[in-house]
Amino acid sequence: MMSIQVYGIPNCGTCKKAITWLKNNDVEYEFIDTKEQPPDQKMIQAWVETLGFKPMRNTSGQSYRSLGAEKDDWTEEQWAEAFAQDAMLLKRPLFIKDGTAVLVGFRDQEVAIRQKLGIA
Image (cartoon, rainbow, N blue to C red; front, side, top):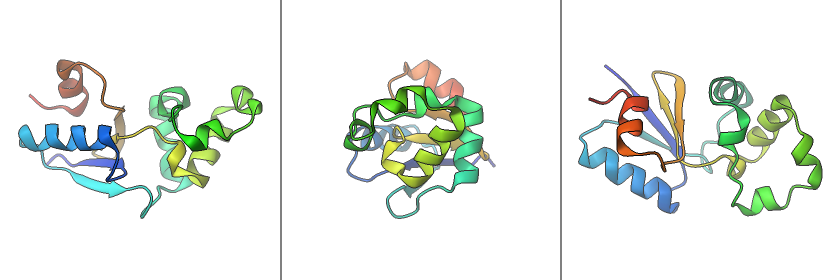
């Protein structure tokens, strides 16, 4: 059976929208609060390798804005380390399917979301 994990925070509007969509489409999922259970560096590194660090950055958050200008020159490894130190830097929600990061954010068209999550 397919397993989908959704990483985010409960009061995030985009996470709420994604969860409502999953429920409405009868998709089983596990919600993981990144404030309570921040993902570890190894997990994040795997996600970065799959999705790339740019789409994973929460550029509208306070944590991102408080980073200095040097963040513009950071490597993939530096971003993975920053994400591990502060989960609020991660764009939400982050979807993991069968252990692999498949989607970050929830702005795609429904067709694209279904495709990435493997939902008919």
